[in-house]
Length: 296
Image (tube, rainbow, N blue to C red; front, top):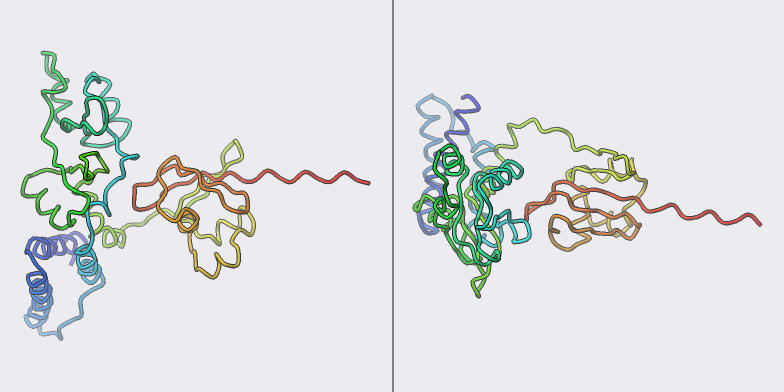
């Protein structure tokens, strides 16, 4: 079967796994998937094959998400891209182009006063018209959910209401974060899609100012070829494998974009890109060399 056919088949099975409520229904869906595999083999006169790696990954990810909440997968408040209602359509267009999003929340005075969200398609249609359009006329109703909402229930609700974005609120009604359908699907099928990708090798990019721009997936072993021995004995025994993993261990959490985390060796890691679940890109500043002692 072709790659596209394999992904289509997995997505079809994914729908059945997700949109049946309760553990019993989920178990029945898993049994049905295995039974279908056996029937396919019987029709072709073969032995029932085991689930392939993609199907095993799909099932494992769905089972893992049963205990996952909106708060676990949301983009944190500090990383939300939003716009004030006072912004003009031209400025808003530039924001969309700069950030590369298809939807942006709109607020009045602060992020805790979100009045809707705008889709890029509606914005471009308004700009192509002759009559002036107020930003409020383009607003779509947002979905507000608590951070404790199970993510699979949230996915069902978003599909049923045809909403691709949900705003996560705290107990006082303040905005904690933002979740899109794409965020949830990434949690489920991201590993599967990655098997078909040919990703670039993690890179280290020296910069004119002497800093290094580093892909967080870069192995610590490769990183140390550029900066020298770095890990302490405790860090080596903790099996830290990547630069991103090292920064996570230092911070004790996923740091937000813009944070600077310092290693005991003196290296500082400036988080350039992070999405609330993982670090993507870092800028590393090397410690200043120690001054040489004066000759006696």
